[in-house]
Image 1: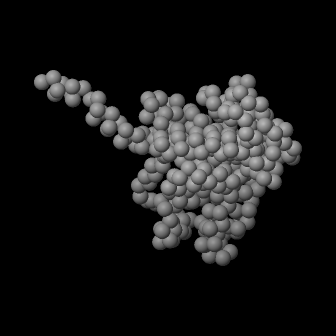
Image 2 (image 1 turned 90 degrees about the horizontal axis):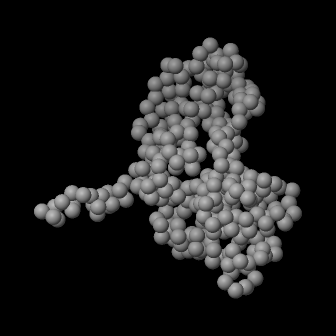
Image 3 (image 1 turned 90 degrees about the vertical axis):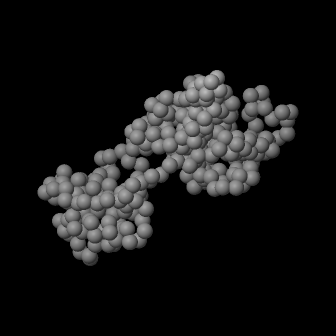
Length: 324
């Protein structure tokens, strides 16, 4: 079997029987097509041996790929080879004989400061108030639901978006994928289609966030759209992850925050603050939807500076020295 044919049949078979997101499928396709472009023309599947894989890894290194990117490509290739072993086309995976070293991968999450996240949320509330028909106090809790004009809906949608990202720590793709039925209004809980097919519940516990989400749901339910998406773009279609990133970028600019901010940084921020406030790491793991607690433990490095500062202020040895 030729490699190109094997890649095509892999996608037809593997992704029809495995619960993987479209984003994952696109990433797999990109990596395998990159491999196909590297190997000799008319390369067969059986020619994909340890030597060829190691040469491809060396080629990636010369092109200055990050260790994390190289590791991801090798994981994709390993899944691809394992698939054909299960199908009986390959007698064994070539990865049994592959030896690769990508170096130490250290990627600490980038979080916002408390001032930055406060300013970002305040900007979203300010933009929402400015877009509404003027009324006393612009209080979400006491006002009736406004009309669903394009301007007022966008402002309410944007407020609900940024507030939800921080309140629940959802990934941007998870928020984009939300549908109207995914929010249980009475319980104030979202059903999240998590990474790797791991569904979970995201609880909204802050009363102001609950009010914002319920108001958005009420307005969104009145809009006519063929899309079941919770968050709509200007065309009445599902708001994309890039669209959400653009909204966050505009809030950052309006709030006068200098550094670049991504939606994922809001997830990092709430996780960091939860740990800093003493929340058990396993609760944070469940909150974020991490399959492994090792992923959650990255955030403990981020809170190290806070830990050292608190110890310097409150360590009992300081009081003992003062007393002596």
